[in-house]
Every structure is written in structure tokens, then in C-alpha cells.
Image (cartoon, rainbow, N blue to C red; front, side, top):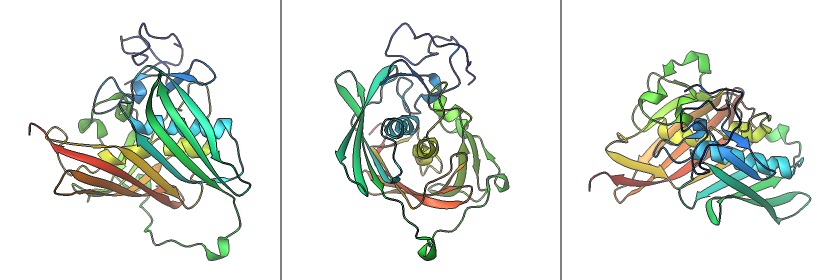
Length: 281
């Protein structure tokens, strides 16, 4: 799905993605229309409904605004996103506030708001950096590099502009519910702006739930209601690696769990709580 780098005009309705009417739109997920206000483009369109944003891009933008408005030498340790309703396309604002200030530990809250409705509530722990190289270690197996895995035609599985914006690779041994994958995108979060370091990595993570689907999404609905990420070091944006496991329970609950990597190795984990429903029941 190709866009254009030249058009910044808002659509006729503030409730629709830029580009919804066939006009050209920027090669970015969002356009800034004010200090705290944005409009979505078709590049961030969700996979379940055409008139919504994909949580992956939206989560990246929420964290980007935290990094932009509250710069710090502390490191992002955990980011959690709760989805409180449909992440509507069109115009919205992002609010940021400090819940727990501190010289070594701080907690920040951020919200994506569509008028009076909050669609995403995020909390971010940032911790003081220190030199722990002499005791570093992890029990995660490094992924093969991206060029060692074959291309994945992600848009054959999922609809939506966000999925179409991605370059994907996946191990030939991937199976329903288990696999290793890499994703990247050429598009920044905001037109004309450089992604903040962690947000530029995080903007792809929620796609994990669609990488090794356990069931056909036309037959089973398994959207995630949250996204929780823990980092053990600051990631480098670019390729994002996923070693993913998807589990469905017997009573409508599920989880997608991934060990995350950048090109230098594992950087942390991501978990997504799933609401699993068999369609037409």
C-alpha cells in the first residue's frame, strides 16, 4: 500500500484515516496536527477492522510522546498498554503525566484520547542506568539473523495498512502457535519526525499476535486486550525479532508470549492477553 510524502491535508472527516478516500497520504503512520494532537494514516490501519488503528503503531506513538515530552537518562524497563476500547482512526490526542517522580526510579502514565474516550492507557517504568556488564547474562537463545530466514507474505494472513507496511521474515520450521520471525518497516511514527530510540523499536511489537497464528482468524477471534513489554537493555530500532509462542486455554483465554531481539541479540519479552472466541457461536 503506497503512500506519498507530500500530502498533509486532513480528510473530510476527523474519524477516518488519512488516505481513506483514495487520496495520497504521507509515508508515515501519523501526522502531527498540534502539540498533542495527531491524525492517523492508512499505514497504521488495524487488521481486525478497517476503521481502527493497529495497537502496534499506536503503542509506539504513545511511548514516543513520553520520550519526546519527558526526556531522561533513565532507561525504559517496562511498558504496559491496556486497550480500553476501539482505537479509532482519525484525530486524537495523547496525554502524558508523571505518577511517581524520582532520581533513580520513575513511573509515567500516558493515554490516547478520542474526545472524552480513552482507548489506550499506558504505564512506563524508567530506571536509573548503571554498569552491570560484569554480571550480565540471559537464558534466551539468539535468533538466526533476518537474512537467514525466508520472506513471509504477511498480508496473505492479515488485512490492513499496518500489516501491508511491514517487511517480514520467518523460519521455515514455523508452525501454528510457535515460530521465529523478524519484522521491519520503512515508515516513521510521525511524518517529518525521527522516532525516539525505544519507540522506534516498540512500534512493531504488538504484531507478535499475528505472526504464528494458532487458528484461522476467519474462524477464531483472538484479539489481545493488552501488551506488556519488559526490557533488559535498550533496543536498537530496525529489525525486530520475535521468538513467539501462542497458547489458547479451554475457556476463552489465551496468551501470545515472545522473546524480543534486535540485530545484536535478545533484549526482553512481550506478553499479550487474548480474548479467544470461536466465530458464529
